[in-house]
Image (tube, rainbow, N blue to C red; front, side, top):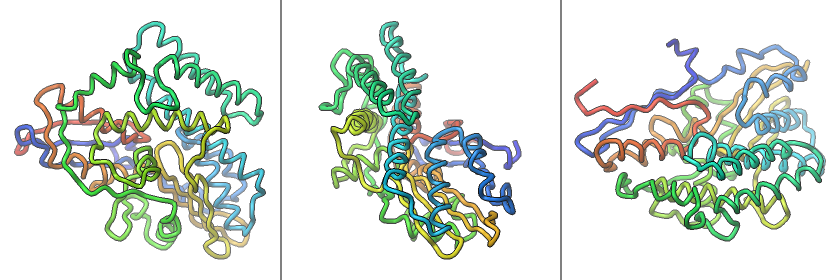
Length: 358
């Protein structure tokens, strides 16, 4: 397949016996936004982005509008900022629910019906009306309670479908190496966006911060809340973190919880230059833009969470390299579960090869 047409990530796990010796990642191809939109009026792009980015489209739209405002030197109103945060959080909740339940778990008939009703309720989350959104959140919380997730407990209720799924993730199937984890935070936004416009586009293809390639997403947010990096960052711990965040998002939408700071941020980088960051489901998303005097695109860059987490020397590789996995299907399934919990925004092709074989 041509490099220009690649819309998936290829991951090869290299094994010596049961030891993961190395991980090679062939990344996806990112849409070349500058090449696609250079010379076009900035006003003509707002309807295009949701079609270009089908996942986290609201986050992309908010990042784009915020970057444009920063380039224009404009300050959005407090009400506009509030609406954007609600929209981003609602989309984050929807994406996390979809990633957890749709096509991942073997559900009985009753649980499947509850999940269908819950996913239908997420449709109302994207609306601007308070009442339908509140009713939708109430429906989602009731469904989660039926499925075993409560706001008080990070683990699902014993006997629930999710508890059964957690039990299937045998902790002995994958023993991860102990590594020093690094996480992307809002405090690094300005460094990131300056690099996006000042460095070549290779930074956005394979980003690093002074040699660091930090993780972003659910696990990073979980560690950020506790200020301590847990030693266990395996599939079970990460799945519990996702369940806990889903419960937190529901509670926040009903006014019962406080979320992390910096869900959205914007940065003026000079005349006609602006950038924005949005904390979406998969992690921190960046847009950076440069406009000419006629308000047309000169440069438009984006950096998605996938580029950090699935960097060739990044968090996933560091987590797996040197780890031990059980032989056969059980070990492979544990690795596959961990890869899925790093939450790529495109499909992944995962293969296992013994060192010395190709």
